[in-house]
Image 1 (cartoon, rainbow over the protein chains, first blue to last red):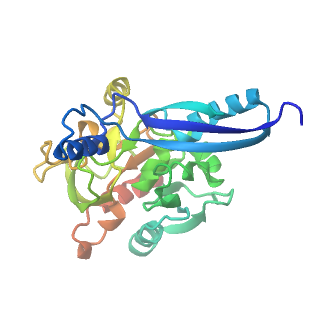
Image 2 (image 1 turned 90 degrees about the vertical axis):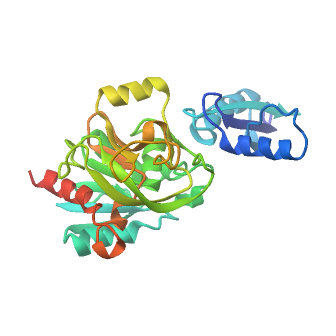
Image 3 (image 1 turned 120 degrees about the horizontal axis):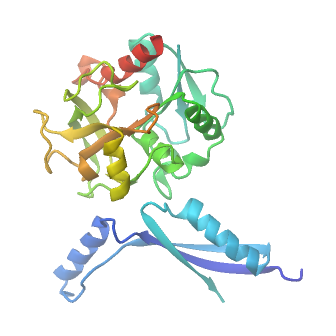
Length: 86
Length: 230
């Protein structure tokens, strides 16, 4: 179908900077214990990979933002970024 | 008056809550399955504790899309009483019926223990049987109970007297030690601006019979009964 494709998108969700991330801190401390003392900060997040089919690229981009904002991330404490994978 | 306890897949405190209401407090109560679109004329909806949808994605994140939540939201917006306990509180936050969000406990440990709560506001449908400053002993059991709200929201919560419970020590004093999960300002429970929706992380249904170590949870249920009677 013209204009319809399979779109693969990678969405990264992580805690906002104003929120404490104890899991990230725990990982950082573990890295320090292993000798990687030059690691200044670690923030832990989530990766979602979605495969969208049968819609236009424009529809896909709109849907990705909606899905990320309404479902994948909690906008009060999380931010997200996304990238269409070619 | 009638109480309705919602069950999601993964809820596990629904029957305990139902038992306290029906068996201990002798109130007419029903269990409401999340897929139905019918609140059956209950006067108070309770979202119970547990692990709805396995806490997948985020605690309460998927439960908020359950069919019955449309009716619960409308019921709340019209002034109906809604009490969210633990996972139920998380669902109310995800639904936006209460402000803020839950984070992983600061200690990164699942906390399963009795805590002390200080009543911050006794003039609510959920605490009218208590007095301000009263200390209640109620257990918690959670991994993601670290309440967070941005500074502006916190200011509004305090200005509007929306804070209902804070974690404290046995004497009612606030401290970092008593605030076991790291919640901002030791907040353990809060309500919306209208005062008809409340969420609390501790489990009052596990503190409604003396044999379980405390009866202080009864104050919350008895306050609701008292409010509905008047």
